[in-house]
Length: 349
Image (tube, helix red, strand yellow):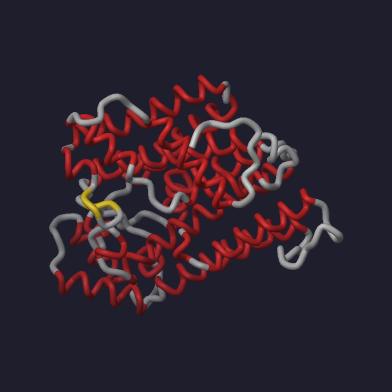
């Protein structure tokens, strides 16, 4: 598959194949067969479900210039995914995470030094391609987004093992470290396809809200899955002093607060044993932390649906033929329908 001009992907799957092509193209190097090349090959093969580039492509459907700019849209989606991949590598170094998506992390397999430079390699390639392609506005958005991600991570680090951390502080941190890149993906897709300012703002809010859902869902996985499914050690966040939303909500409840706060304080001075972790799990459930987090997710999901309804005039995306709507309208409604289906299935995230 080669680079092509003015190609219009006929489906989301076609567009994502182009994104994968650009991922390979933008990370190509002459180091195959060397130890350095082995590290970079693992890095390049570490992309997951590519939710962020998928959202970028879907949001581009709301712009009138989507067909003519389809190649740039796919290039930008690849750059967003490369930024995400770099952030995961660096996260795993900070967290000393042995696994990523159920496989040994880059830092575990090759060491922290190699992992740092591997993440830097991806970011440098993003900057290079943005400059080469003349995508200055996207470069500004992504640079500002990385800044927000860093601020969110710094905020999280400053509240580690702090039993007084509030829900508001936690939400502010995840809005930066997680939701910012979702928002950037949607804004970039909207801008590149020629959306007006109001639509771009709405799609940015959609992306940020999806990012909040993603993080809260990840918080719940720590209580609902095993290491193999989540790709990380169960309750690693709690052990590391990162108190997620289910824990914070339970800590605020009269039924569970005293026990949760005591365990948080103990966790700051020693590693809790398995009986104490089981007690923490049970207390979070009994204190309503799981259900309250699910309710937050439902609220964010409702916000996403309201945004999509406003953008498409309550269209369902089904049984809309050329005789009842124009091609542009069909594209919008179909994209909105795909995003709604993603919201219906957590596994998409």
